[in-house]
Image (cartoon, rainbow, N blue to C red; front, side, top):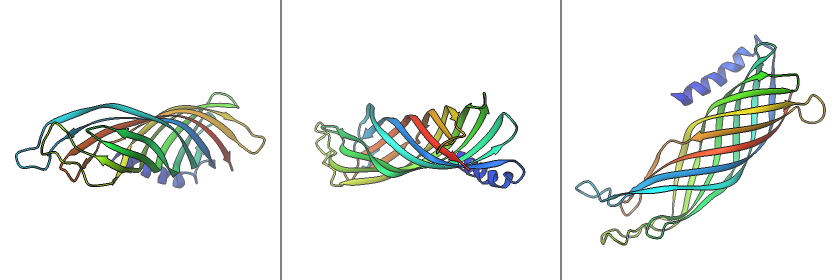
Length: 230
C-alpha cells in the first residue's frame, strides 16, 4: 500500500505541473552507506514435527559506497515551498559483505538495481539555501553467492547445504532530511547534503538442508548530490 501511494503521488505530479511553475532536475548522487542486518536460523524447518531449534543471529553491518542517478519533477507551490517527486536508480551491483559463519552461513552478499521513488517537500530559507524532508519507497535485488556451508555441527542430521546462490527482492520505506545549496551559475544548479535511512522488509530463505534463514536490514546513507535544473 505504501509503495502504491508513493508511485501514485509521483504520477499525479506530472498532471499537477500544468497548474504550477515547474522544472525538471537530473543529477548524480554518491552515498557512504552502512547496511546493518540481524535475523535467525531454524534447523530442519521443513521436517515433520515443526522443525529444530531456532538460533538468533546477532547484528552484522557493512560499509560501502553507493553511486546513483536521479530524475525529479519540481513543482513550485509558492515562494517558499516546492514539492519534488523523484526516482533514484543505483544501476550497479555492489559488494556489500562477506559472511563467515563457521557452522552457520558462509557467503558473499551483493546488492544492486536499487530503485527509490520519493516525495521531497522543500522549504526555502534564503535565495541560496533550502531544507527538505524525504519520504519514499525503495526496491532492489539481493544476491547471495558462494554459499560454502550451511550445517550445524551440534545437530547430527543437519547436513551441509548444496546450493551455491540465492536471489531475493529487497523493499522498504525510506525517510531522510537534507539541505540544498542553490547555484544559478555554472554547470550545476544545486548541491545537496542528505542523511537517510531505508528500513527493508524481512526476507526469508529455506536452504536445501531445510534450514530456514530470516533477516531484517536497515541502510543508513550520507549522500552528496550534484544536480542540474532546466
